[in-house]
Length: 565
Image (cartoon, rainbow, N blue to C red; front, side):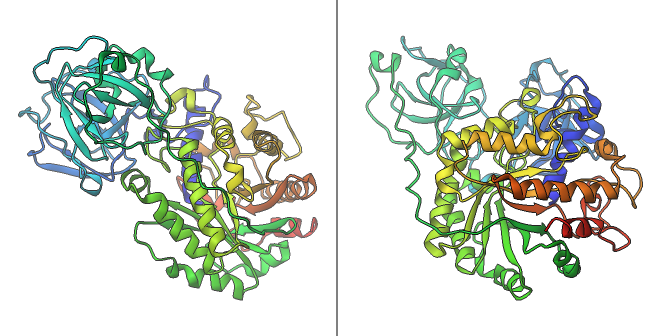
């Protein structure tokens, strides 16, 4: 699918540009392979001609826009930056995820476009949430024994991010008893000496930065905003963590018996005959859920698949900013996928590549939080249709966390171990897997020409890693498995050049071998071929190269798959 291919493109660039990093390129690269300095993490962000909310608008940036920093204003609250398209202007720092190791203070102070007084954030807030804009104010007297001290005027919020409701503002010098943190360690949870409890950005606290990593991880659902009596000095010094989020509800029973399944990700049914030759009995299509969406809108998609003799897998993902900004999001999402199950969806994949900040809120990538969503979705689906198979969302295969940090990307092996520890297997009939970067036969476990032999290069590397993480509790479902070949198109873009020598004959042979190995492995329940008919889609994201229907209308892979039925 397009989201997966965009991820693969960006992860491949890093291999070319920084050969010392034997990892896939994470989702924060600027055009041409440069590592981006920042990424927009709100639905919309106003870029302005000067570092002021009242300055003329240059461009409205969308979530995920990558920026290269060129300078800052005097207090570092605004960056002067440029987009990949070459548009330059001022953006508010509080609405950006910054590259790991980036030091704003090291940027040159610039007056590009003029420098009027700094004002509040110019971003369009999520669901009406106020912006940050913490600026220094007069100190208050410190209270001894506090775990941390506020260093500047700082907003306390109802959740770990600027998209959450502002509960109040703390003056510099306010003492805070730290009680927890989010998974990234960028936000901490605590209670002030005045009794206000909530979340605050850790970078504006002093005296406890080294202790942040030892704080218990919380998922942002702890009750906040209730005033209480000020804690004693002993309570401040040794405050216990607040109650963790409730454990997911026990899974409802379901029945999804059946043997090995083969299908393809389709854009339409123009090549249904080729799919039948290949022995495909399933189709996959992606659904992007938005708040307020009606599942009945997808009844036609489900009914058409059935009418054509296929079972249908719906991969349902949402918008990261809605997930982060709506406290009722998990329940709303669960209700939506439950509605799809009631309409007859044969399988539902719960989200997509949630270990990337493209697909999950930046700074809050967390397998525990995802498992909360998975559990709610599973119970909603099974309550509406016990026969609908629930597949956990497949993470993006990657090893990039060392380059960009856990706020932006988690290696998929770490992520699935976190899912397993959180009990995700209880809420899935099958564990979702993606594999789309192979350039050797699937039977190989080493010898990749790229030289690093990283496990994501190999079919068996993915099977062994995912099976092992869950201890064989659930079978695996490859919701994307494909091989890229440029044959019939031409030269691949640079970020995909690793596949330049893969022929259509190899694509066909390797797909057939992979399906045969999966079928006989005793570990794999389903393989969905990425993709059937995105033929002709070529450019920066060469999805057509993965398509098994080639530009001339032939399908060698279909014929090869027919031979292993």
